[in-house]
Image (tube, rainbow, N blue to C red; front, side, top):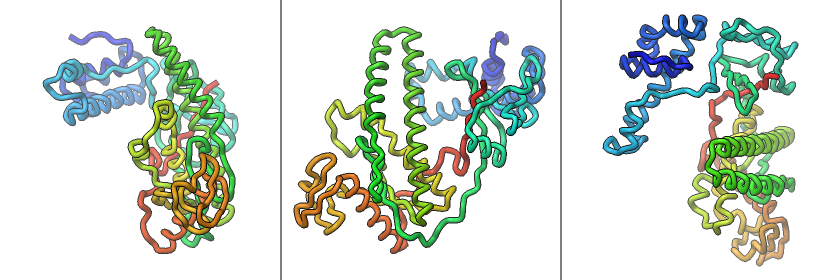
Length: 380
C-alpha cells in the first residue's frame, strides 16, 4: 500500500524501494503521473523530483554495498538498510532554464512555484558575482532555505587563464594558526580575531549541546554554520589578496604540503580544538583555484624544517625558533619574524622545484567542482 507523504521526493523514494526501481527512467514510469496529479507539479518540476529521489536511492544503496553503514550483521545496518531515504522540507530544489530565469541588470529572478510563476523576485549579490552569473552560468540552479532565508546556488563555468610558464620568482606563503598566512614579502594576515571568535563559538555550542533539547541543537547548528561562513569569507579574502599580488608581480605561489598535519603533530588538549578547526586545506584550495583563473603557477613544497631553517645562511636548529613569533639564527645571528622567515624558505624551495622542473610533492588542491565556482544569490 502506498502511503501518503507531504513531500513528493520522500514518496518517490519509498516507491523506488517498493518497486525496486532505482534508475531515473524506471522510477519515472511508476511515479510521474501521480507526482504531477497529487502535488500539482509541472512536467519539469516532477522530473526533477523523481531524479532527486532516484539519485538518493542509488547513493544509499552504494553506501550499503560498500559497507559504509557498518557490517551487514550489525544492528545499525538492519536499522538503516530497509528504509528509503527521506527528504527535509527545506531540502535543495533544482531549477533549470524552463523553471527559472534571471534578469541580471534588474537584480531579479522569475521562478516557478506550485502557486504559479513569481516574477520580479529581488536578489542580492555583489557586482562581481552578478557579472560572473551573467557571463558564465551553466546548467541547473538549486533553491534552498536556511535559517529562514532563501538562496539560489548557480553553477558557473569560469575559463582559466593561460598558465605563466616563466614566472619572475615565487611568493612564499606560510600558513599558521596565530597568523593565518604570512607572505615572503612580509605581509602578515593575523588570525587572533578569528581564533577568539572560534573559542567563543566553541563554548556556546558546548553549552547548547549540554541542554540536550531540539531547540538547543538547532541553535548549535546555526552557530556552526555561521562560524563556517565566517571562516570561508576570511579565507576567500586572503586567497584573493595573495593571488592578486602574485599576478601583479608576475610570480608564482609557493605553499606547504600540509596533508596529514593533524595526525603528525602532538598537541596539548586545549590546542586540539583550535587545530582541528584550522581550515588550512580550504585556504590552499581557494588559492589554487583562484590562481588557475589568473594563470598563476602554484607549487606545493615539503614543509619539513621550514620553521627551523635560517633563510639567510641555511642553518637548521630547533633552537633557532626562540618563540612563536621570533626567529634568531644560532649560526649567523639573523633575526626575523618566525613566520616571515618560514615563508622565505618556502619561496626558495618552490623556486628550486620550478627551476628543476620537478613535480610538486602534492598536486594543486582541486576545487570542489573542478573548474566551477558556485555563485550564491540571497533572495530578499
